[in-house]
Length: 268
Length: 268
Image (cartoon, rainbow over all chains, first blue to last red; front, side, top):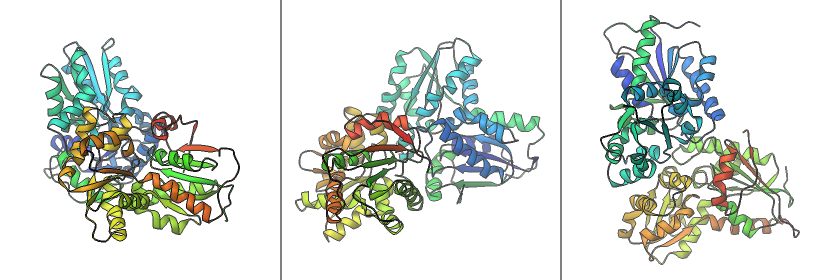
């Protein structure tokens, strides 16, 4: 099955966080059709095994593939950390994850001290960021921290104030003694905590949102493949969730930076 | 298919929390065989829809039924709140949930002021505790609070100290102005936060763990049905998880109050 310039960009995440990536794609590539799938029936992926996350990612990819996509964006660090090889073997369109983009941006920002990564348990355990950094910058010192309270805190809507800073200090407070100059936000929920994280880490640590690099990488791939949508109009945008579409719609606007229109229920 | 005294008690939860209920069952009914299933591939249930939670509960019940059970304990408040009717229609053994037990214990403890319920989003939205309290004590004033940060905090291992108290204050701090004398811990994770909750609410609020009533109710049902296991030996105990059995084993000991032996992977 070939894909063409008129096909959509498929974006999936375990839930609502990937809308921060979709937001960057909409800004960079406004003419593209996009399909977003949040696997809310089985979210979060963060504490689950690589085998289970890979199984879920393949099911999500199949759902989007049936609707004709020309590229798949895995807008979930946990899935990007463990499922890209299986997805690339399974699909015949480009597959882009958020981990590589985060690594690239972090190394561009770093001034030669260590690089820290804040992510879910599953992402940290996968060593995906650690391996990516070591591959691109042999010898770089990496400090990885699992932050299991961050995503629930963001979903709950508490991103600033005393409690948010207490949670940030709990997971990341010791980084101020670790001689790092860059922090990768290794989960698509974490950009919403950026102000609280900056308040705890201070001005000497650059905070990098890997998700922002994904839109650039996607634009390059579509350009190189002659697959860019043309025309002046905004693309069509559809949203799907595997459970509680109303919840994705309500929560999602903070992540997308705009109201989320109708979310359709997806049966995988 | 009939069931007999030699069959096991099936216990299931979305993950590890139900081990607090299993612990009470082991203490009350040490001669019984027990089968525990944690649906860790799809946990948590707390923010998911009633339809999806019911579908997951039926799959868990089918898995346990195939191993011959004489009673099913739904050791998850969210599933107890929404899936009991479907489970009772689907199975031909007694099905016991944690909600009714919590209601009964709360009304026994209350001195006539209001009753508060701390639970997941899904349990609060289901109105199961609110309806149960109103049914047993018409006119009782009920204050229900969703506490989405409690379960991640407990799983992360932070149950005491400044951060735990800050999170408890965030979700429940205003109860001290609500004229309630009893709080139901409406999620099986919450008993591990009991000390921090008590520190925030003070000595005038009685904290009730509904899970403890489940073992009594189970003992009555088995006695009435002539289904109690006999003999001096401890029953066999098997543990299953739908994902990452090693994680359930490591986390579980704090919930079970004893080391969790081998956890087997269950394919539903």
